[in-house]
Image (cartoon, rainbow, N blue to C red; front, side, top):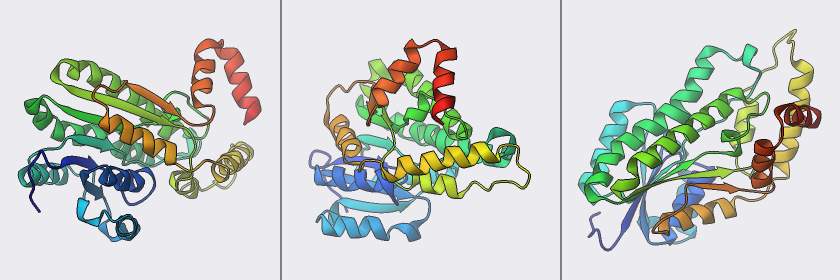
Length: 282
């Protein structure tokens, strides 16, 4: 499938088998983008394809296998997209997962996997796309962060640490690319009805004789309750589309019930007051 650049803007999205990635793929396709929808396990493309057929955008979406922890795979995929379509106008770094549990009981293997996917994978995909955007002096890099990139919650240390890293990386990158016509943007959602939390909770096994059993059960019950009562992700998807189409988007977009307030509260309160409030609540 070939087309003139003027006819279609091209979006590369990671982690599109479910959640924000799947919905963003459909939304950008409906906006007139040609979407390169990537996912690690290509056998999980059924939900995306069904949604694409339903919304009549199947011709505007190409599903591509991509493991963001595989350097050769990243270079090959980005190179093939540029060769075939000539451009990547928007990169949405969405691939990621949430590792739950208390730090003492989380293996270093799980810590490294969290950072390999959420941080180093995001950085490497970005680096692969940057030269073409720089040459054209235009492009948007939209990094899907989280309220956990601004606020660290107990029993979510690996995920929070990875998202704090994404925030710091994005801040530096935004300043580096300011004069190159490339806009770097952070989307910072709160809790929404996606499967990231259920997957994160499923990965946690309470160890026999755990020193944190009481705390883990209490916190995870609250997390599950929050996830069960979360809003649909429509406003997050709408914001991503808005940013993709905006000629000069802002840097940070906190989204969700109480997210902006919580971030401002943390920034304004003395730490002792903040930590008492959080520990009492959880």
